[in-house]
Length: 95
Image 1 (cartoon, rainbow, N blue to C red):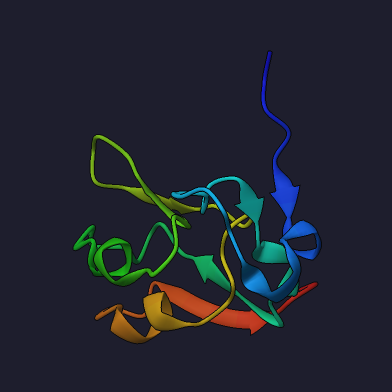
Image 2: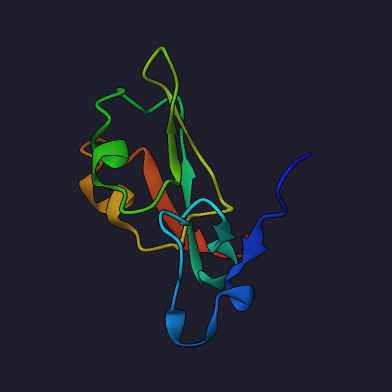
């Protein structure tokens, strides 16, 4: 039986989370205004985006390629700012 993942609107009042760790239980990606878009051709697999992402939103694969998990990405733009080759750009949500 799989556990139902909760959205950010279902987080308890005042952000009180009685049991930790719970970051993977709450899908918080719906509150972003901008989203990162990854260009695999430009990516040099330096993993700076993965290291600096404050959420579990950058998924690292065995070959050091990455993908963005939009269920958890809040659109902070850190990944885009640390990318030395600008393989990640921020675009308005919905584009």
